[in-house]
Amino acid sequence: MKKTIRFAFLSVALAFGACNQTSINQIGYPVNSDDAVSVNVGMEAFTKENKAETVLFGKVAEVCQSEGCWFSFVTDDENVTVDFGDVFTVPKNIANKDLYAKGHFYRDTLEDKTIEIKFRATGVKFK
Image (cartoon, rainbow, N blue to C red; front, side):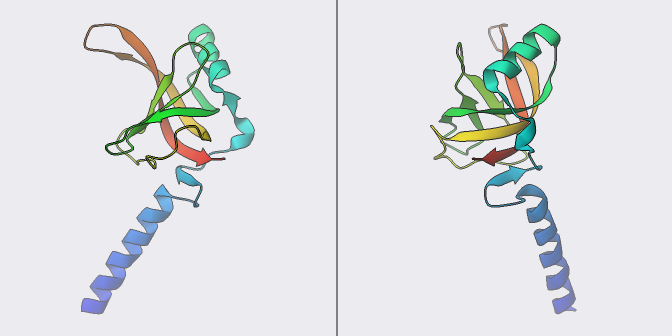
């Protein structure tokens, strides 16, 4: 009985791990880097055409140092914050690295009632 429970627990843990980390350089859902556009091009498509779903490619500006729960991409104007909806975290040492993020843009209303454009990633892939 104990072996069956251990096996079931291990099977669930392995299945969950496979869903969240498909390879060493990828976290979350698979990211097709062939479909990637630069962060600046993605932002422009979102603001002009309301095209939210995309794969972005860019350089990481900064990373949440408490949990790795967000990072920001460098842009021409203002950096874009990328979050993961509490689904996964990223390593805290990825600042200045290039990476891909699959997800969608959205508008977030801040405490002071200003609206900021952010990106919710379902997966990231390190170059």
